[in-house]
Amino acid sequence: DASARPDPGMRGSARNGPRPAARGGRARASALLAFFLALALFVPGARAWGFGSPDPPDERAIEDRFAEDFEAPIYRASQLSMDTAADLEIERKATAAKARLAQRRRANINAPPLFEWRYEGVGIAFVVAYVLNYLKGNAANRQIARAFETAFLSCDESEGDEVKEDGRAVFRSEFTEVGKLAPSDPTYAANARVKKTARLSREAPYEYKCWATGRRFLTGALVTLRLRKRHDLFRVLYEFRNPAMAEKDEVIVECFFRDGIVAPGFCFALGATDAMLALEKSPLGAKDVARLCEKCVGPKDAAGRRRLSKELVLKAESAELGADVIVDEALETLFSERAYDAKKTSVGAFFKTAQCLVFGEDGGSGTLSAPKVTGVVADAFDKVKRGDGEAEKAESAKKDATAGETRSHVGALRFVFALPSSAAAGAETYRSGLGELIAFIPKLVDVVARVRLSDAQKEKARAARKRVEDEDFRKKLKSSAKESASARLDAKLEKMSDKEKQRWREKQAKKQTRRAGGRTMIRKG
Image 1 (cartoon, rainbow, N blue to C red):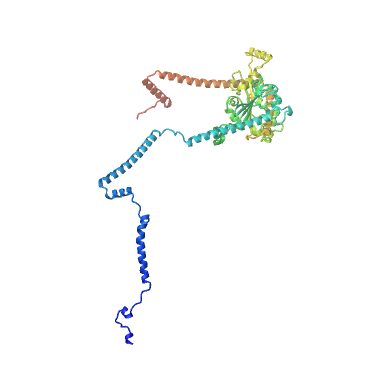
Image 2: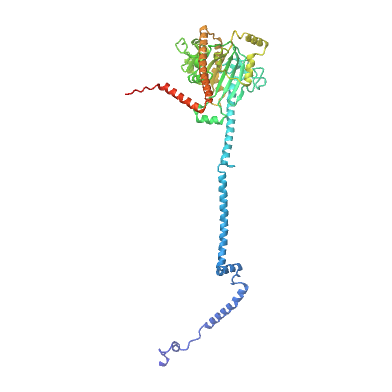
């Protein structure tokens, strides 16, 4: 049917016929209208309640913004000048502070700091180290003295008076009193058998002494312990830096003879080679041992062996005196070639020297210095030597009356022994090492007291002493003449003017030239 077909040239709406009503179009339009109405009503209400509205403007910010945007050039320049002035003031103050600090440093550049731990700390540490070393060294020396006293000087009745090989009863059996210095001394005891707490008198932290008296031929014996200066920190550091100069612990026993026991001609010395060299250089041996004594070998025994070891040296004023000392059994049992080699660890390790000194009123060996005795020991020695009874006073007065006819001579035997190197050594160690040497002391005293010099020995001793006196006198005279000539020359030069001194020096120079080279002969042609 042609009427039912749409015309292709017609528009869409006409072609398609009448359009049906849009579904939901009206509903959408109503929704949009409602949304815009609600939005228009909500925005003024939200602003009224404070939502969505900006913060109220700050007046200071508004002024600063206004000043930045609209300030005049003059105001801006003044603001910059104020900021610059504040910076300059701060910089000026900092510069002034630096200047004051520099001035203070220049003023105190050489002044020591008031307090710095690096100096005070070192000083405090050194003081503490010195005190600790003093306490430790003093305790070590005290322990050595106590061990020696226990080994040889203690008087215990339970051990008896028999002299043993270890020497523990030598002083108790040979001397009446041991350790009696003076009634005021703590070690004083009327009975020598009573054991006291300490018989050694402490003279110094490194020196202890004990006085023994009451034996024939002797006025007394002085035992001196001369130990290392362990309490001195400077000495300890010096010995650590120079081990060869380190001191050794030693005991010195000095037995003083009574008047008339020894005379000029009794000087001799026995000891190891190195100890004898040191003795000859010391004040005690520089005159008698070095200048009066000569080396002695002595006779051999029946088997042809040497009576004295090769490692020992004996020097005496005469060969006869040396033979009398060597052939005695007391020396042969210790210092013969066989015995000395067998006792290397005891006698050989601790024996140093045994010396006989003679000093008296004859002017010969009287110039020798006697062993020093000080303190209460000196008082006791003088008391024993003078005597307290009427008989001793009468005898002393008789000797003073006959002093023009006879001269008295006083001598001493001086023994030097080394001590064990360990400070912790006990009494048994001392007895095993020094026992035979301590027991040898009274034996040698008896040997020397029984020696009788011949007329030839006495004459030789007097001649030797006269020779030494003449040498010393000539040396002293030469020295005094030189000193007096120098004094006269100084006095003469003081009286001269400067020109006279100059002419005198030129004249002396010419004299020296003529004496040195003589007159020079000049030949022509």
